[in-house]
Length: 85
Image (cartoon, rainbow, N blue to C red; front, side, top):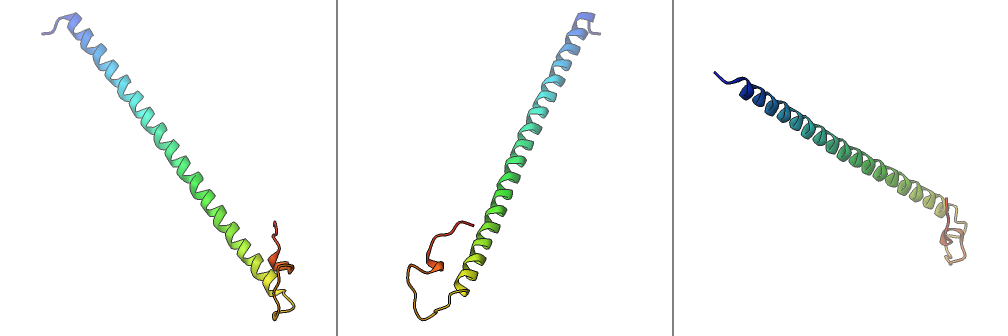
C-alpha cells in the first residue's frame, strides 16, 4: 500500500499532467484555427483577383469591339489609353 503522502503526490502529478495536456490541446486547436483562417483569407483573395481579372478582360473586349475604324490603329484610340474601372 502506498502511504498517504505518496498517493497525494501521485494525484498532484496526474493533475499537472492533465493541465499540461489540456494546455497543449488548446494551443494546437488555436494554431489550427489560425492556419485555417489564413488559408480561407488567401482563397478569398485569390477568388477576388480572378473575378477582377475576368472583369478587366471583359471590359477590354467591349472597348475593342467599340472601335469604329478597324483598318487603322494608333495610341490615341480609346482602347490604347489606360483606364481605371
